Length: 160
Image (cartoon, rainbow, N blue to C red):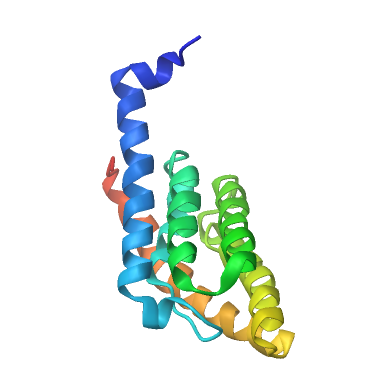
C-alpha cells in the first residue's frame, strides 16, 4: 500500500523539505569542520534544530544530516551513532515544546550530556569539562543563531 501523503503535492514538498534540511545541515557542518567537531565546537548547523517546531519533516532531515556529517567527522562509531541519535531525540522533544523560548533547549542539554560523554570517553577528557564546553557551543548555536531563525520564520510565516 502506498503512502498517499507522499504521492500528493504536499507530500512532495515535505519530502523535499526533509532532504533540504539534511543537505544543508551536512554541508554546513562539513564546510565548517574546524569548528564543527571536537570538545570545543560551534556547530553552526545546530541552529537548524529549531526547525521541527514549525516543520515536523525537519526531524528526519536533521537526523540524516547529522549522520552524514558525523560519518565525515572522524570521531568514530560512538559519535556517529550517539551523536546522530542525540540530534534525533532533541528534534522530537523540540517539536513538542509549548513555549517558543524552550525550543532550543533540548539540543543544548542532550548534546552537552551525550556528546560530552562520547568525546570524554573517546578523547580521554574530563566529562564535566567536555560537557560544559559542548553546552556553551550548543547554547551559542541554538539560542544565538537558532532562536533568531525561529522567530524570523514564525513572524514571516515562511514556508520553506
